[in-house]
Every structure is written in C-alpha cells, then in structure tokens.
Length: 209
Image (cartoon, rainbow, N blue to C red; front, side, top):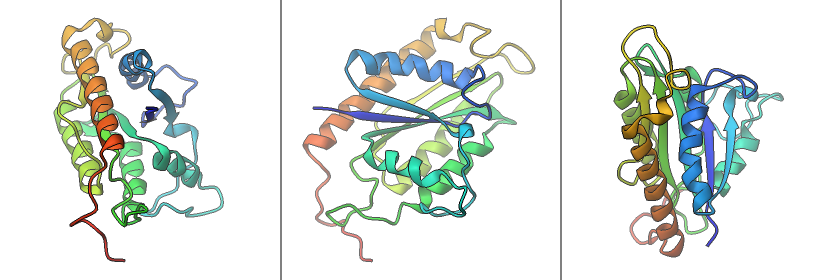
C-alpha cells in the first residue's frame, strides 16, 4: 500500500537558506523513509501564495492551486512552523487560510475533501509557544476534516530569550524530540494506512451543497 506524505514548511526562509524547521522535519522524514512512505517537502516561501479563503487562484501570480493539487493527492499532511512572539509564522496562517478555502469541497462520496487524510505539525523555536502553536494548527486541520492521530506534534524549543536554535544547538540529539519525531511518524503512517484500507463511512456525514 503506497502512502504519500506532503510537508508544507512554513518557515519565513526560502529553501536555499538553512532552516531549523526544515531540519526537524528531516528527523520525521527519516522514519517515513524507513517505512517507504513517499514524501515531498514544499517550502511555502519559495512560492507566490496569495491571500484569500479559496483554493482557486486569487490573481495571475498565485501558485497556491498547484500546491493544493498536491494536498488533494496526499494521505498525510504535515505543517511545519517556526515560533515568532509565541505564535505560528505568518506563512503558516496564510497556508491554513488557503487550506480552509478548499474545506467546503467534497470527495466522490460527498464528504468533506480532507476526510481520510491525516495531519500533523512540526514546530521549532528558541522560546516557549510550541504547544500553543501545535494546538492551533492541529485544531485547524481537525476542523477542516483531517484526522488527527495521537501525539502528532513534534517540537523543539531552546532556552527562553536569544540563543541558539535547533541546528546550532544540536536539537536533533534531544531524546524527547527524537522520540516524539518517531512516535509522530509511526502514528501518522498507521492512521493513514488504516483510513486508506477502511475509509470513514459516508453514512451520517454527507455534505449538502
């Protein structure tokens, strides 16, 4: 059974720059690779994503529709976000708004389009806010129709105040973060396989459009 994972890295940096969020995402992907999950990482800052609550292009330069097609094809969706002032990045918020714009669409059974997809979140920072950001992102995904397995938030935060971030501080050696990266990966894979083999029944959740 082929499982496809899509990771939307919502760092403020482009993919050509070192990203602490990307580095922690890599720790999760290592476990995906071991279980032959096909994974694609998209750095949102590399694309022109317009503002709006819609899955369609908001202007001629808007590249979100191409990303949205990949979301539709994915069994697993992970959002990666840095923490700024205790909150998720502005790009994370923009991506969630665009995802929400497609949440009223339906699948072939008439259910919301994100049914039978699972979601998770990766968060990095050098201050507090990891659980707050994780809670915000996971609720948003759940509200849109994604299934949220247990313990699918992986994060790393250093000491409060200015200081080294994930890469410089060798956060990948942190036992807690490494353990949760593994738990997250395996729970996402398990639920994705389960939902692919046994989709959520249509009875009781057909959307009237």
